[in-house]
Length: 203
Image: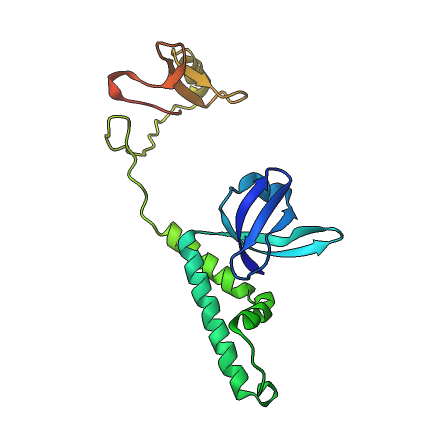
């Protein structure tokens, strides 16, 4: 498993991946779903394997923010340091002079936990961010709310007919109890609107 940057793609067919951890040539992997949902310069962690004459992604993939990439590399550096220290203590590795790049290449096949842990931390940070402030075109804050009105038993059908008769009330296909409040603008296009500055999106 390694960390890759998408340098090129053909939606529905393939991705061109540049390994950010090892000095190797870019690889072209045949991948339909990911090539349709990802974009050029996105960064992913995945495992690339060769099947016959083509290279494909084995299993799933994880997307990473640019900020998280540096943290992944820091975590891998720590693993490499720890591995080198442990090798120095073992008799079978005495006299063996491995570079950091060689050690990294050796540990990457078993380093999936580094990528999954870092990705999970990134997701936790993302979902703990405060919600953005929602405003309308005039910059006024929007209040997300829900209002419920009691309806007497047996009056639902009659009420539905009356609501459907209000100009701008458009029901969903096949749903007689759900409406969008739409109004045509000067150009004949339907937009969400209401009188007195009160905008109702759905009912």
